[in-house]
Length: 330
Ligand SMILES: NC(=O)c1ccc[n+]([C@@H]2O[C@H](COP(=O)([O-])OP(=O)(O)OC[C@H]3O[C@@H](n4cnc5c(N)ncnc54)[C@H](O)[C@@H]3O)[C@@H](O)[C@H]2O)c1
Image 1 (cartoon, rainbow, N blue to C red):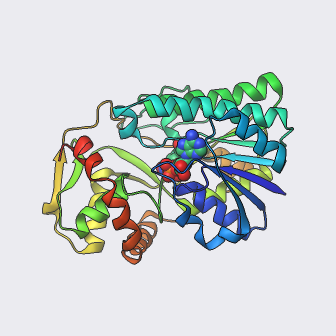
Image 2: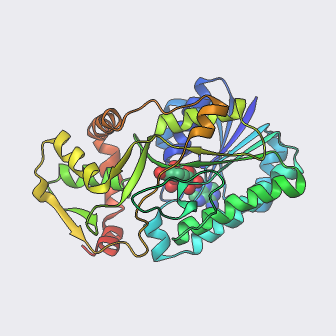
Image 3: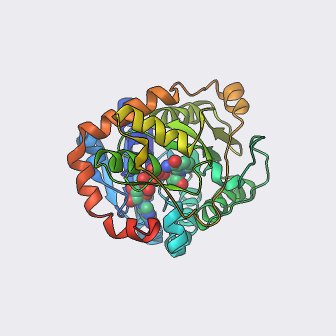
């Protein structure tokens, strides 16, 4: 079975590729290698995959790859993925997330793909207050340029199923964390700042709630969906492990034995969604999948991974200094 993975040099995509190789899939990776992509994440499997450095918005090249490789399954992770960057400049988000998804859907349609996994996010639903959950049929109500572009891509996938009969499954995972995450997202930022005894920027009052899904659990869920999911369907992928941002920060400080005085509240992110929470009864009932990793275990493992991989992390940090000044007004 040949699987074509877009964004396979990214954080979640690379975990998916490592697992795909382990599971014996013939794996083709397509990635533009933006600031967020890095082939080091695929070092352990580099001789077992076929890699194309390609932009998913490049229709001719993408079509050429599909014709040459004739994949059975496409798993589409490639995206501009960071909300804060979408607030600074939405353009690449529209290009990659909307246009790039359309190019891939067309290539899949023209090349008779047997399954297209379209990766969306829980953020397409908008925000919740203290109560409630998002179900797969909850209307989409995105609030950031990032989530709006992902909602457009999500809807395009569903439209291609309905209009052309393209076998698309839509997945909406919650916030992922774990090894190899680029240190612009909350958890690696906190680990790094804490290790350097630097102020840890926390938006607003830190009360915002996210549902934390360990990256290997997320990838495993997708393999289960490939096997048992139904085209045209949507599956939420969540863990039930909801934590306030401030609780996440305190958990990391406690693991690293660092003082809470490092916490520095900064001006809130514009349009910051208060809470996300996925109802996961459908994936449990129809696919038989449930997340394995409790937040306390996953966060320990994550902190340990960063401590063991400081060379990689420090190289990334060098590229982030200017960006941090812009978003956290450092
Ligand atoms: N990280 C999360 O918590 C989370 C949660 C839910 C859904 N998602 C979705 O999962 C997917 C992967 O997220 P991630 O956190 O691993 O992202 P990431 O930013 O770490 O990786 C994205 C990858 O896509 C590649 N890419 C970007 N633009 C491209 C283009 N035009 N052509 C080809 N490749 C391109 C990048 O080089 C990078 O390797 C995204 O679709 C994201 O929206 C992420």
